[in-house]
Image (cartoon, rainbow, N blue to C red):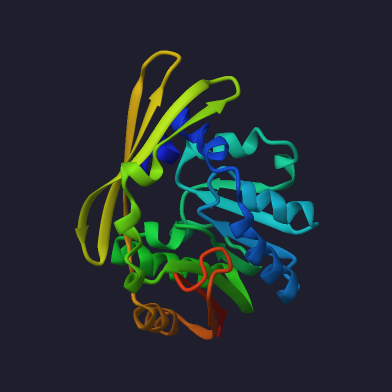
Length: 241
């Protein structure tokens, strides 16, 4: 089940306007280029921002996401017809043979259920050609990122074209490590509607992730920092055996 911020049509349409700076994707684009990837599976593709950036570089892309509302946003974007969009998850994909599988931003951590995480790693493994790569990021639990998830730090008002003024903020709900739950609130000035979306992320330790990858048929080639969050995240680059 996708969180409401991705699955609710009104909130899915806000995703890009409320998060316009996607410079975090530059590192993934460089990885795809360095690996010479010609076919990419974007797991948790959301509104398709990264998938479309790849397609602009002549790469064949399959985007998969469980949130139909987010995929509707992706499909409405210019050039989206060049891509293959699948509503679902990596555990139940049609036969694929890709060079690279990606999970950008919070995707890996949002797969909080251990069984679903194992199924995702297996699904990505099955979709990769022998020697293909999986890359994803996850926050370092030692940095305790959730301590900054407060209304004071996040409150803002955004003018969204065609929508009007939208007030938004995040608040921490519960910390029960390794799980952290938080709630986004959105207030639409045009009609006064208030929508909320709860999300839970799993903060995995580095050695836990490495063990999971090895168990599911990968060789961990590199664990690096995320350029946009230096010292706060792990970026895993693993190769299918």
